Image (cartoon, rainbow, N blue to C red; front, top):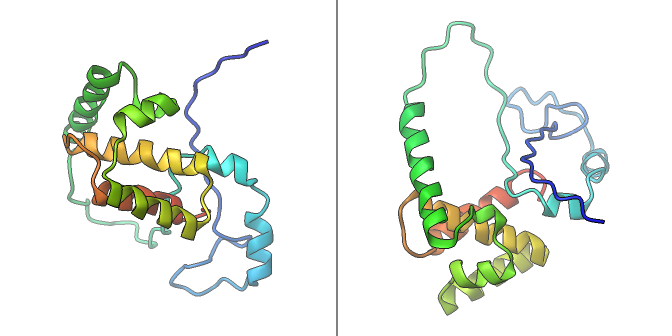
Amino acid sequence: MRFPARFQLVAAMNPCPCGYLGDPSARCRCSSEQIQRYRGKLSGPLLDRIALHVSVRREPMALDTAPRHGMPSSEAAAIVAAARQRQLRRQGMANAFLDLQGLRAHCLLDAEDRLWLESACERLGLSLRAAHRVLKVARTLADLEDAAAIDRSHLAEALQYRASGLG
């Protein structure tokens, strides 16, 4: 039997059992063993299937904060839509759905960057599945910049999304 499903999972968890690891208040008293046990509740194969691992700092307590200045949502949406159109024109699907053959065809790296990525994945203890996720994210970052090829900066940023948080 086959049960096809496509969904986007957005999940959150605290950095440690008490939730204050890395907080400027220094309220966390969790031992490294407690933190490791807490994070160990998520299996490696599950984490391999999550493309982006992003750490988010706690917001400071301020009820009347000034609005942040950055890119307007409408501008960000236009950039994302253009990147998605590039993906559909190039390969007929979003980067997230590329199989191994699609990765080989559309996520080409020069020899130096390939060796660099392999070495980085080895140092970080990433599985081959996680390395493929890194390539898909790097391809997406290149698409967001309208770059024809993946370069080292795209690979480094994609790796940061794996290295932050849980692995």
